[in-house]
Amino acid sequence: MTPPPDLLAQAFARHGTTRCAIMATTFRSGSTWIGRIMDRHGLTGMKHERLRAVPVHGDVAPMIDTMLAQTPGAVFASRLMWPQRNRLAHRLDLGRADSARFAAQFPDADWLWLRRRDVFAQGVSHWRARASGRWHVQSADRITEPAPRYDFAAIDACVRELVLHDRLWQDFFARAAIAPWVVWYEDLLLDAAPIARFMARFGHHLVETDSDLAVMADAHSAMCRDRYLADLFRRSRALDDTAGAAAA
Image (cartoon, rainbow, N blue to C red; front, top):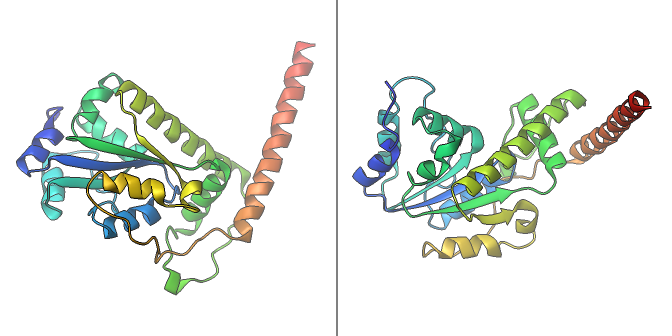
């Protein structure tokens, strides 16, 4: 049986949630790093992808109630990847045309859209994490990262997936008439002020940005990114040459 479309909003009301802080993002965007910092400074729950556990089948209501009961409070904070947003919307029977209604499930929500300019480096990071199964490394446990053999097709699939998810977030915000708080990963490496300003909207102050997570990118990442771009350039040129020959 399909749950009512407003099931999530009703659950928030039952649990006394009056505000939401949602980090909309894509894989390997630095969201774990930023989420942990925000969680540590008052936005409890932001270090988790709390809607990740939405079941594909079965009753979704118990999972939502359990999730809200585990971190009670007036503010619900969570990271949200596109596939998780899409699965939840599907379970609530809310399609693309219902983007505004989906957004309305989150009471008085502020949406932070964490993006990454260098999608090629992001794609390589996503590919390496999938290949090795190592998504995060504690600074204290820093060791040499596994260096999987370069695979153009696998990296290309990851890049295309990330671009798609980012464009779908863009479409969702436009259709839901949301003006998200846009933050770029590369900018945060230099200055955390954008995150501090977002947290101030909830009455929290950012004191320090030290992280217990190690940077996983290394020389192998850079090599794979450069090789992927070189291969992409050659392949696109070959396609252009083929198209030109066919048109001649």
